[in-house]
Image 1 (cartoon, rainbow, N blue to C red):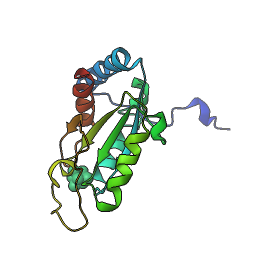
Image 2 (cartoon, rainbow, N blue to C red; image 1 turned 60 degrees about the vertical axis):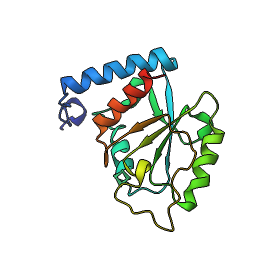
Image 3 (cartoon, rainbow, N blue to C red; image 1 turned 45 degrees about the horizontal axis):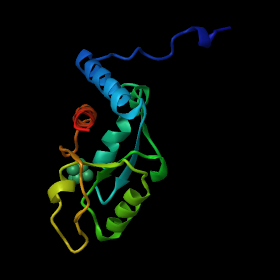
Length: 161
Ligand code: SF4
């Protein structure tokens, strides 16, 4: 009888020393600035979904943000930060504001992706309102940003607090 549970069934993760150093810095900043836990509520205000796909990768075993104390949460009431993607359509504009209102203070908005700033690859059309006077505390550029760029953006955000 083959005992599968005694055999390795996955390949070991190939780590990148540069990325590991960035993860270490971010973990330290989360500890210093947020007591070891940073909760993020992601809001898609009208994106192409590529920024969300890159953010999803942050939860895989390679980037493993949860091991650094950073969590994506389902409710804004449990969040510290709203991570905002997309252009700000008329249909999502007010939802983004409602979400921000429900985050307990202190709270911050991080915009991710070029189209949050100037509509990026989208033209401004009748469906797009933008983000108006919503105060963006930090911007992470890229179309889309890679997971490593998002980690760098979170480091810059945490350093600025
Ligand atoms: S910034 Fe680029 S990748 Fe991200 S949602 Fe906008 S168009 Fe898509």
